[in-house]
Image (cartoon, rainbow, N blue to C red; front, side, top):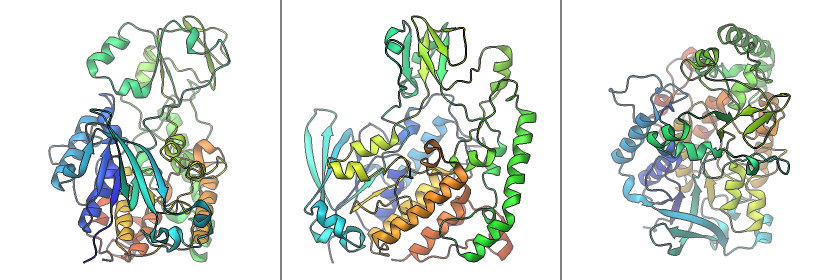
Length: 492
């Protein structure tokens, strides 16, 4: 029997755990490199009050339900971590994780850039281990305990490094108006999340705190509205009939969006505090810009413990912050940047090759070029899981991991590079049509509005029936969830 190829996974968050599980099921022995001392990705370092933004029945693995003791619709971060730890234990994943080992760079060797660019098929052959049968990855890993560096040779690399961690996005300021002139303390939300509750209490107690970031307001209804029937949308790669139907039904999309916006404006005092978003509700769904409001949020605004200041820019002075359009500076002791992360740059930084650094995240005027949200047509023997978003990153990540494991195990071959690039352009058009033309929106690559359609494409690639429900109308109108994909019959 042919020896299984060497596969490594970088990151032991949700994506890394799912990838590990499905590779193990197909007989591979993946190595998972995790820089920290525990699994969980973002969930291992969140603030105490953080909860799921999605109901737990949508945020679960298809074959691993939440325990009966968890009854809250949106469990807190501690419960999520316990769920992920139980998942890892149930499927014996921990023994494959090398904790405290940080991947500092990956380099593809054995095949030159000119030869790779000339290939018509991905990796030269369209299968997982193409590379002219000569290419391998050199993975440079540094051990946390002693700083020792080791280079591992791998046939396939799966990046599960996430977008929303590691490399904070810090605003730029004019000279003499940045945090250097500010006498108070300035941190990023990443630093805040890494603190325990005692440290947080000491940090903010008695302080005048300014949080810089965009609050994406919505109610619990957002999760249900995100499941707007996909018949209303022009889906990437859809045939003539579905496209015609989407055109006919498009007025309903506008009606749903306006009705929801009207409802939210009546139930949340957004207008009173000038917090109505520039984008429509539907664009917010398509771009993944919705969030469930923290409990009693606007009650705290009404009582004055939270003050909202809509502003695109701000600047520092000695002990104050001045926001755009406001003549009176705000006194502050502590400023917390909730300004996100540089996910694109994080992707680029892991590559040693300048060419791969250039092509992995594409350009700002297009989406990140990932076929099936996993494969860059220009980078052989490598996949990325967990970069794009959906209404439930757990089960979307899980089906991607299944798809990738099926591909790596010779379940199917990829189309030509040209066909993959054509498909990426179709998705780029979709994102810009429904998410808006701002790069901050369409480059989020959020599949929420068409997540069932997206799953259908992966199922077809894997050779299994995407129609998971019993009955034509049930399949057409009842939203799909994680349990619908339990027990998929895949190509072996």
